[in-house]
Image 1: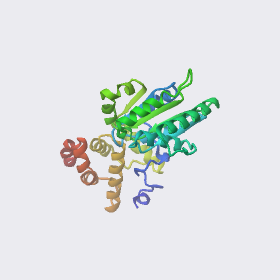
Image 2: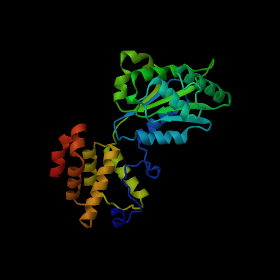
Image 3: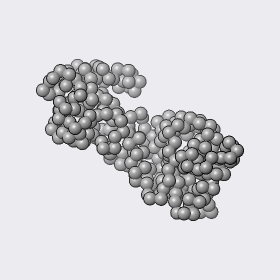
Image 4: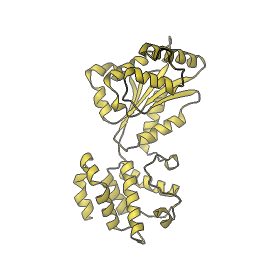
Amino acid sequence: MYHQYFGLRALPFSIAPDPHYLYLSNQHREALAHLLYGVGASGGFVLLTGEVGTGKTTVCRCLLQQLPEGTEVAFIINPMQSPTDLVASICDELRLPSAEDGGSIKRQTDRLLAHLIDTHARGYRTVVLIDEAQNLPVETMEQIRLLTNLETDDTKLLQLVLIGQPELNDKLALPELRQFGQRITARYHLGPLTLRETRAYIQHRLAVAGVYDEIFPDWSLRKIHAASGGVPRLINVLCDRVLLGVYAASAKSLARRHVRSAIREVLPPRARARGFWRWLPALLRG
């Protein structure tokens, strides 16, 4: 592949969430600070939203790495579950013994409460992290709200972190979820990278892969930022395709035709969906 052509140790623009390539922009750091603050608060929900590809998973992984010692985590990656199934999934993530009667909602909640009381007595805290939370059914969200009622006289026993796309905010605005919305103690919306952050992001990934020389001239960084809208996942795809084009052509350096070709190959269907299409004519002319 092209990484040897450029003297890279590995492919720097894979869309896999490799922690070695972790880059936290200022807003990613702010998002992480909000989540850490919320997790440390007593009760309520912590909310992180952002468009697809803006780095929510990156922030989530950082959060898991920085949780204080003595914190147990139930990580739910499939939120499209009934209330009973979701509580059962939380219990399974916490490795609780299976319910003897097959698992009614009362039975599942009782065994969760018993576990939370025990962990609290041992000085531990429990965090439930739900990814893709915009897909939670309304009735399941109400059950989640009820779980925050699990408490001692002075302490909430369960902290919940919801991570989702902007549609999650629309769902929380529903009248039937107003009590849920009132319990959010910390929230942050993750936006796209600025041009300056895009430059730093690309340079960081190249450096981790072993190259500090300038592969992407400044004009190409501006075009990649505009074409991607500053979305890290799209930046990765575009940069990968640009480098592949240079390699396939055995070119000595990156040229405008490589960027134009990458934009044509990568963006049209996604651009229509995300509003980037209006930028393409000018980009392809440049």
